[in-house]
Image (tube, rainbow over all chains, first blue to last red; front, side, top):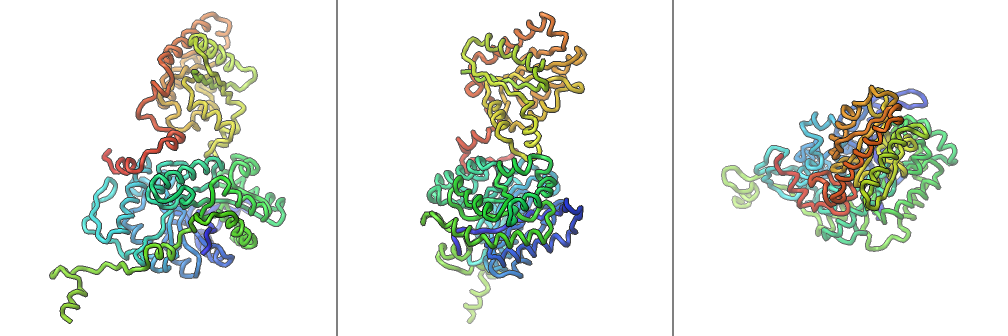
Amino acid sequence: MSSMQIGVFSVGDVTADPTTGRTPSEHERVKAQVAIAQKAEDIGLDVFATGEHHNPPFISSNPTATMAYIGAKTERIVLSTATTLITTTDPVLIAEDYAKIQHLLDGRVDLMMGRGNTGPVYPWFGKDIRQGINLAIENYALLRRLWSEDVVDWEGRFRTPLQGYTSTPRPLDGVAPFVWHGSIRSPEIAEQAAFYGDGFFHNHIFWPASHTQQMVNFYRQRFEHYGHGAADQAIVGLGGQFFMRERSQDAVREFRPYFDHAPVYGGGPSLEDFSRQTPLTVGSPQQVLERTLSFREYVGDYQRQLFLIDHAGLPLKTVLEQLDLLGEILPAMRAGFEEGRPAHVPDAPTHAARVAAAGGAHDSTVHAVDGVTGQLAEADERASA
Amino acid sequence: MTRLVVVSAGLSDPSSTRLLADRLSEATVRALGTPVDLEVVELRPLAHAIADHLLSGFPPEPLADAITAVERADAVIAVTPVFTASYSGLFKSFLDVLPQGALAGTPVLVAATAGTARHSLVIEHALRPVFAYLRAVVVPTGVFAASEDFAHPALAERVERAAGELAALLGAGTRDGVRRPADAPRSFDEQVAEPTPFEELLKRASAAD
């Protein structure tokens, strides 16, 4: 496994192609995500992450079904989320669902916690957006216990209490999926990631570099403060965004209508201003390579780089071409990330490495207790044998 | 050094809004009688940046500087022209992109200009409510100037009175030391400089309402 994971993350928006006016169907878009993930594996990427949304124009509800399906059609790529809504999803279901696909995919799974910024989703799921931070903190504290303790008694503010609850299946090999926490602007979430020694992911693509730097540095300092290692050993992930063609002027010409009409920034800053202010790179493969390798200058050596490539109505064919181009510069990108990387900077976390660090795999199956004898069923068998 | 920030939303150059803003800041500096670090934020050159911020969610550089200036101000003088019976859209858009709590506890002098005296209550029915929402401390005297007021000595008296009130409010010291409410939302920079320890966040998360 390489020290740096490179991959793609997909929001799953259904957006009209502004150059043709054609809007893909939900079905096409759902299948497109699968095709993109398979292609990502083909070109040698390490991670495919899907978003989670519960409203049109997105097709990204039920991320674990997507991950399981993609997992069945791939062999190597790690499936992740960007993000899993820790605020409005019951942490008990998160514990079960992600442990389940961890087993199905033999550990090729991790996840990223996020709060979600779609106002109505909170009331639809019976929550209050003003409690977003508190929900993220309390729900995640419960989720950790559900994965680390076989039997949980729990009482909190946001969810019905639990008595004698066992989340099944137990995490694969007794090691829970690795967790990233994503936040653009909330120091509380960076603090949370640092406290637990989890990963911190900065979306990076909608904000100036100075801001990403500030958040990542804060997380790194707090990671050290909580005794998980030196600041430069904290586990950092970044977003990125590019559009490339062999000749940079072709890239700009082709991408501009998509940029100008993109739901997130259309009508706002010009493509040129936005490219200067944020990591968006529209140009030749060489330009994308150089820009990407420059991220380390302000966040330090890090562990995961995810690119947003399928959005704003870009047709699947174009997205797959973008992946081909990424595949061409991938070896140079990996080599660039290795260059000057100190040995004490940790590799990107994987299930295998985490199992090894935990002293090897152990079966964490919880066996039911016999209601009459109060003993484990197999203990009874042994006794009668 | 008192940090006094003047926000002027006039659109023409020269503008009567800026003229009124300058008279208010000069009078405030005189009334304070101590060294003042005066910064004028003209919104017109920031108009595109403000629109970009509304759409992209982050402030381009010159706007980021203006927002920081307002956040760090010990006192603010806010002056807007009256458009369609209220503060101008540009003025309100600037307030809309300020971070939560940016003006909490900040002494503010509000003023407005208009073509006709019929708009004089705009201070009371538009400006005061919005600054009350922002938890600013607005001085009792608001200054309204219709075009014709610029020929009337009563405007100067009103300017002096409002400036005197702002200076008096500032007299006890600066915002950080004295007037900032204990429960005002902390800015991003404040949170990063002095993080809330996670144990405290955890306790708060599950605390009853």
